[in-house]
Image 1 (cartoon, rainbow, N blue to C red):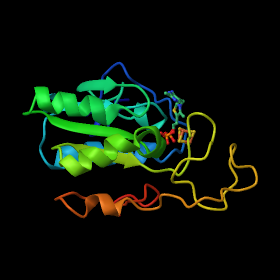
Image 2 (tube, rainbow, N blue to C red):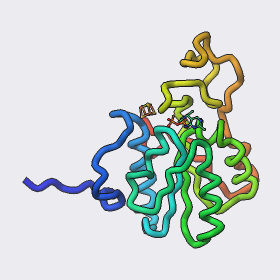
Image 3 (cartoon, helix red, strand yellow):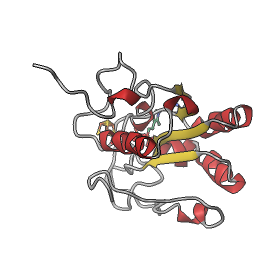
Image 4 (cartoon, rainbow, N blue to C red):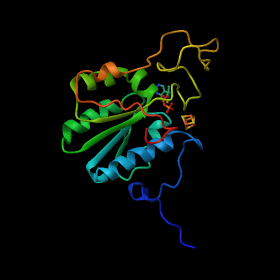
Length: 183
Ligand SMILES: Cc1ncc(C[n+]2csc(CCOP(=O)(O)OP(=O)(O)O)c2C)c(N)n1
Ligand code: SF4
């Protein structure tokens, strides 16, 4: 019996056959959405450099994507990506990382990359929590939610929207939901 390869398999490294993410995690749908966008736009993986930080979402491009990937330190993928874009301006530079990585420890890099309007794509995967380390409160955690580090419920105002970052430039905030692919 011949098994048909997944149409997006050509964009992933042949030796990578499983993910570190939990079964059912929305990161799988985000992974496909990124690869489908690259496919539909007719872009080539060899023209990309992907950068991610540390966290479950940071495992999306690395080691899966068959391209140049930088799995960097927690909170710093935008800093690495900025250096890549300056050194290799012809490359498409894409950062894929979690809300903890990009709005807490890496929050300043996000703000200043947007302020400078650096030519890069940032896919910020907002699950409202620090997933990989076991469910600690992130800047995006909704008020009232009990987490490992807010056992009495989160009281402070969360960072619910980053739209203000996008007011100035030609930037996109699609605000999708991986539970409803395509929206
Ligand atoms: C400097 C530093 N501080 C803290 C950590 C521990 N740490 C690893 S991942 C992570 C948070 C991950 O949350 P998020 O970025 O939202 O990604 P998710 O796992 O939810 O996809 C933290 C605090 C670390 N690796 N390095
Ligand atoms: S811990 Fe949460 S964010 Fe991390 S892989 Fe599992 S479901 Fe996804």
